Image (cartoon, rainbow, N blue to C red; front, top):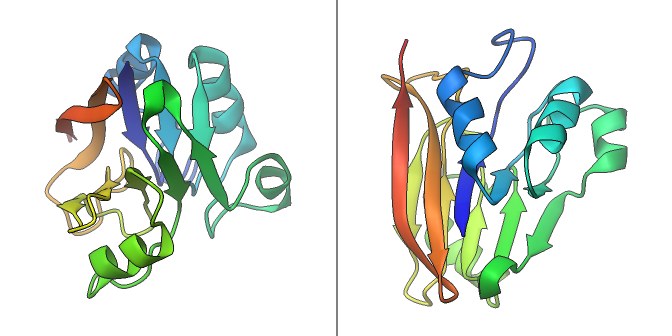
Length: 165
């Protein structure tokens, strides 16, 4: 099962559209994970229309329309991988341990908010991934998103994709 991970798309404030390589990845994916800060319901509609399956939550910049359609934390178990998606995981200091304690029964936690890519694994086995932002790189050299594969209930082949400026 092919996954695409994205967050903090901030459309149309930070860009007019998602970058073409991300749209291509969405078209090829079995599941798209979006960790909030859509800003615009049209972006949610567009990804829902193109994704085979979308697992998503709202972020702090998302208004009432998005909050009515999306949960604060999304849970799913595609191909046997237990996933939670939330927007803000708090400060980076102590994040891995804090999230492992908060999500003891989850295999993968996808989060956003910082726009900074993150990839760690807690001693409990919880994998924490932040794909960065495809439209607002902030203090990063590139805008980014991630892809991964689920095989036999395990997350493999996690890749951070840098987008052209």
